Image (cartoon, rainbow, N blue to C red; front, side, top):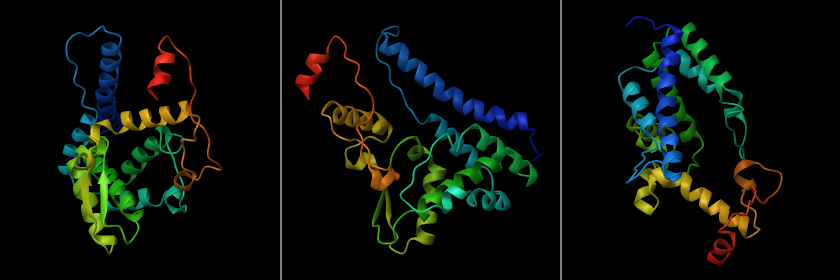
Length: 222
């Protein structure tokens, strides 16, 4: 397969983002009652598409090594990160590295998927018996297969990998349920962060409360 142009690789990312933005906008329109009837949203479709692409290509080993050498991965826990580290600038650097190593667009996605699985596996304690997956990534069959292989290779306890659905939390509803829990903690005046997991300096009450017309009803419910 010929080496794709950078614009082709950017177009693939744009397709994934378009899928997610369409879901988000549909949700906004439904909540504003501008879409009638029943609206079922499946957050994670972009992960499924990326998984299908990743399954069709081989991992680029030099690119994988480059990805694994990111300074964040060498830091000790507790730690947390987000788009400030793995955002647009990082993805641009990934595309440039992929071009240097001669990776196709499909190989780049396959390698990013393999790197993600490897880093998750490395963070799992040696005595872990089960890893529970949720969110859009749990619908990425290639990512989950890579994760099982990585866990088998580096975790002595050979943990079982399960979806959170098996324990009463739909994988696609994780963020919604988590934000509901965090909102309740804020309303009750209790800290919602976990310094032992994120490395925050202290427990804090998260978010802001903006009273609306149903505020008194809401407070009675909690």
